[in-house]
Structure formats: structure tokens, C-alpha cells
Length: 401
Image (cartoon, rainbow, N blue to C red; front, top):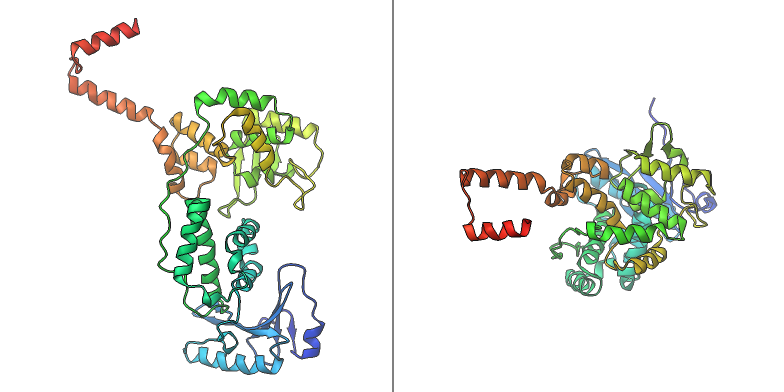
């Protein structure tokens, strides 16, 4: 028996007017008259699309918005496009053929509603940053943005906000245009092709041994207990900021000393062992907990602390380490593991890296095996004789004495 599509409906203006828009996400309705015609209902709009599998991949080009496009127009256009697809011809929706059809902001809203919030763990941050960096183009027709516009905008962002920020903003813009092209929201030339990004180096900052004393002494006297415990747990677990702040009590196994993280930035789960120091802190915090759900509760929409930027800045003012970021706490654990000659595989496992490339920056700190190898080679070169001149050796002996 063939599988019956959910939300089947005989499309009429009266029936479609009755459909309520969901507060978030979207709902799909399938027309019972024209197979392949669907209506996607978002929080702010109702749009006609066709849905067709081509070589195992779904095509979902947009036809138009209801009620600007009538049901009869949508069915006529759907039949035309489905026929063209069956013949292997390239298809473009006539509804999207006008240069001013969709603004960049409209395409971005579809990108978030239909894709990002279900597949990207940082989609909310993407919403904020995209508006921040591309708000000037929000109402601009997407196909009027040129390659020169993008390159100039990236150059300006790099100068004003930094190279890393400019590159990340460009990646978001390119993703929106690519997604819009794939699903029929955009039919023009992608202005993000052949753009020159900034060459950047991986950040290597961590708390150095000579900085740890003042850092820990300041941390012990920190009056913001939640900030203090967050910093401690970041240092002790090496977990990402979002995971530490979103830690839940039901993720902690107090018997086995394990922390189960259901989803990380790389879209995978992770189980971290908790050291004695981490367990002592969690047990103390559990005894005086203010929430049975969150380890770091707050009155935010999410129910837990989101990002303690103000508290972190005040804490740094006390330490004098102004160039330290919260993400450097995670990097600090990896750096000290490397200095203790742990393998990159172990470091990557602890930090939840999906590829060895991300862990490679810690190889620079694993110097003891290299130093030992160099000294062994030097011993072979000397063949039991002094390599350095006698005067240099005498000066070294005086310093030792």
C-alpha cells in the first residue's frame, strides 16, 4: 500500500485561509488535486512550492506566496514545472523571475525557518550576526548584490571587525545564497563566488604557567559564584562554552563520574569523564542548587546562563589579562595536556574534535619528545666529546655553581 502523505488537503482559498501560521518552524500541506504541489506554512507566510525527487535528491522550488498567487495559478505553474523536470529540462519558477522577487532578508528568513534551526546548533547566533553585518542589505533585492559589493563589504568588515569575523560573516552569506539557489528562492548569479577571504592563523592563546597564579588567586575570591564555577568547569573539562552553560543535572552521572553531552557543535554526542576536582565542584553546586534542571540557571528565555560577557570582563580587569577570551579556557586544558606529552588523539577526544586538523595546533607544545630526540642526536654527533668550545662550557659550569 502506498504511503499517504501527511496533511493532505484539497487546496481552495477557503481552506487555505483557515490554516493558522505556527509560532515557529513550519508545516507542510500536500494538494490532493496536483501531486507534487505543496503549501509550506511559516510563522509569517504561506508559500506554494513543488516537491519532486530528482536522482534521489529533493527539489523544492518556490512558486509564490498565498494569497498573492491563487490556487489556480499555483496548480498551473506546478504542472508546467513538474512536466519540465520529467523531461530533464532546467526549471525556473516564473514567480521568481523578477529581479525584485525576494530580498536578502526574506531569503535569510526562509533559510533559518526551513533549514538552519534544524541542522545548525548555532543558528540563533547566526541570526544576530547576519543582521549585524548584513543589515544594510536586508531589504535589498538579493540579485542586485554583486560580487564587487561582497568583496568590498568583506574588506571593510576585516578592517573594522577583524579578519576572523569577516571570514565567518562571509561564510554565512555564502551559505544563504547557496541554500537559496538549491531550493529555488534565488535564481541569479551567486555573488559569493571567487571572493578572496583573509588568511588567518588559528588562535593559540591560553593561560601560561606564569599567569596561572594570579588567575587562580583572583578566581578563588570571585563573588559571582556562577561565573566562578563556570570558569572552573571550563578549565577542568575543556568543554565548549555553550555545553558548559547548558549543562543539566540529568546529564551528570554522580556514580560513574561522567558527563553525557547530547549534542556538541559538530552535531555529535560526547561523554566526558569528570575528574575528582570537577566532581567536588559539581557536588557542592548540587547541594545548594537553585534548579532541578539546570546547573547554571537564569531568568533567560533558555532557562540557563547564555553568555556571561559582563562578568567575564570584570573578572579580567582584576587579573590584568585583558587579551584572554572565554574560549581560551577550553584551549588551556588542551595546551597543558600537550605540554604533558599526551597524544593529539587523546587531546582531540577530550575536546570533542571531529577532525585531527583542529587538534593539530597543540602539537607545537608537545616539545619534550622533540627535545629528547634532539639531545640524543647531539650526543651521537659529539661521540662523547664536547661539541661547544671549552670557553662556553666553562661559563655554563659557573652558572650551575
